[in-house]
Amino acid sequence: MANGLAGTTLRINLNTGDIRRLPTDEVLYRRWHGGRGITAKILYDEVPRDADPLGPKNIFIVNAGIMSGCYIPAGSKVEFGSVSPLTNGPGDSNMGGHLGPTLKFAGYDLIIFEGVSPKPVYLFIDNETIELRDASGYWGLKSLDCEKKLKDDLGEDFEIATIGPAGENGILFSCITHDFGRQAGRTGQGAVMGSKKLKAIAVRGNKSIQVKDLDSLEKQVTGIILRTQKHPNMVPWQKYGTAFFIQWSNANAVIPAYNFQTTFYEDIDKIDGDQLVEKCLITDKACFGCWMNCGKYTKAVIPGKPEVHLEGPEYETGSLCGSNLGMKDINHVAYINWLLDNLGLDSMSGGGVIAFAMECFQRGLIKEQDLEGHTLKWGSVDDVEHFLDMVAHRRGVGDWFAGGTKRAAAKIGRGSEKFAMQVKGQEMSGYDGRWAPGMLLSYMTADIGAHHNRSWTITVDMAEGRERVEGRAKIVVYLQHIRPLFDTWCICRLFWGELDITPEEIVESLNHITGWGISVDQALRTSEMIWNLNRCHYMERNRDNGRAFDYPPARAWEDKIPSGPGKGKGLSLAQIDQMLDEYYAARGWDKKGNPTRELLQDLGIDYAADNLEKLGFLGEPIPGGIPPVRGEKYKPKAF
Image (cartoon, rainbow, N blue to C red; front, side, top):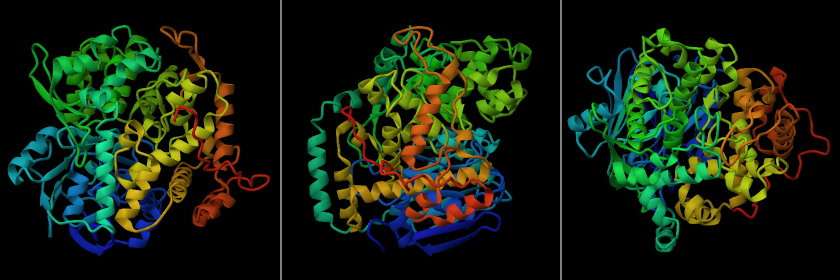
C-alpha cells in the first residue's frame, strides 16, 4: 500500500452488478495526485466524445484524493466527477464532511461506476463488505430525508451521500448531499447519479492510512494548529462562517441583486451573518479534521410553514438565494436553502435559475398561466417554493428551467439570453464582475463553467484598480493553477485563503504523507496539466474553438451598474476581448483560445494535441515558442 492511499480501487458495473477490486494505480496518483486530477484523466480516456452525459456510456467517479483522511488541516474532501450534463464538458464537484476520509478508512481510494442499473440501487460499503443493494424503498425520498432513513436503517456510524427527486428526474443542476448539509453542487453530478439509478452511497470504515513520516507530519501540523488558533480571522469564521462576507460584498458592490441587475442591496442587514447567528443558529459544525467549525447548523422558522433544520446558508447561497431573489428575511433565505437541499438541487445554480425566472416574470416573458396560476415575484418565498416544485418534477414550464438558465433562455428567447447569468451553461457564483474584471474573467475561463472556486480575484481587483483590465490575466492563471490543487488533493482551501497556511507548508505535508519530495512549482505544473487536459476535452466534445465558449452573457458589457457604490461602472466588449487575449497569451494558447502542440507536449499530454489536430482545433504555433509567462507565480500585494 502506497503512502497516503488506502490501496484499492473499485470498478462497479451497474448493468450487471459486477464489482471488481483492483490495486490502486500508484503511478496514476503520483502523476495526477487524485481528486479532480484523477477525474480529468479517467474521463478523458474512457468516455466517448459523443456520449450522452445522462446515458450509459458516461461514467461516474468518486475519489478521496491523496491527502483526505490524513492528519492535516481540513483533510475532509471527496471529489465526484463525470461528463457534466449541464456543460457537456468534463465536470467535477467536491464536498467536505466525513465521507471522503471514511471511504479511505474502509480501504478504498477510487470508485468508478459504469453503465446504468436496471432498478434503483445504493452502494453499501462496510470495510471489506461491498454490495449493491435495492434502493426501491428509498427512491423518491428527498435528499435529507433519505440520509436520515439510511442512517436509521444502517446505523449512525455510516457516512451517507444521497440524491433527491431532482437527481432522479434528471434536473441538470442536481447536487449530491451528505452530512445533512454538505453538497457537491456544481456541474450536475446528482443528475448523473440519478441517470444511473444510483440513489445513495453508504460507507463505514475503521482502517488506517499509512504515511511516510508520521512524526514529522504530526510535529508540523501541531504547529499549524497552535498558530492558526490565534489567527485574527479565526474568530469571525467560527462565529459566522462564510456568511460574514454578505455585508462585505454589498459594501464593495459585488453582491448580485435581482438576478445581477445591480450590485448593491438596500435590505442587506435583514439577511446578513448577524441575522443568521441571531435568528437561525443552533450550533457550529465542522468537517473531518477541522478546528475552524465554519459550518452553521440552523433552523428556519416561518409562520404557516414547518420549522426546518439545515446547514447554512453560507455566503454563496445567502447571496444567490437572498439579495439575488430580493429576500428580506434571513428565515426565508434559510428556508429556500433547505428546499433546494432536500430536493437535491445546487443552491448556487438554483439561486441563479430562480432569479432568472423572476426577471423573466418581471419582464412579462413568463406569466401566471405558465406557473399554474402562481406569480414569481421578487422576495416571495411562497412563489419560490411552488416554482422549485415545478422544476424538480419537470411540470409545465418547470421543464424549461430544469436544464439551467442557458437552456431556459433558448426556450424563452425574446432577449432573455442577455440576462441568463451563466458561462458554458453553468450559473455564476455570488459575485458580479462588472466592477471586478478579474472575477468576470475567472467565470469566463473556468474549465467547468462559471464558478468562483477556480479563481477568486476580487481583493486583487480592489488592490490594483477595479476599472483596470490590464494584468488581470496573470493573476487569474496563477489562481487557476493553485486553487484547484486543493480539489486535487481533496482538502479545504480556507486554511490557505483565510488562515495564511502557505502553499509550501501544504506541499511539505503532502511530502510527509507520500514521500514524493515534490516542490510547489512541480505541484503547480501538475495543476496546469490538468487544466489543459480539461480544456482539450471540452473542445473535443463541443467542437469549436475555445474562444467561442468563453464569453459571458451580454449584461456583462451592455448594462452599467444602476445603483449603489458601483453606480455607472461596467465593462465594454472591447475590454472583455482584451482580457481574453491576455489570458490566452498567459496560458500559451493561440488567439482562438486553443492550446498548441508545443504546450501540450511540454506538459506531457501529446495525445490531446493529436486529438485536437484531427478535429481542426489545435492552436496555431506561438511565435517564439511557449511564452515564459505561462504558469508564472504572480503574487500581487493583495496576497
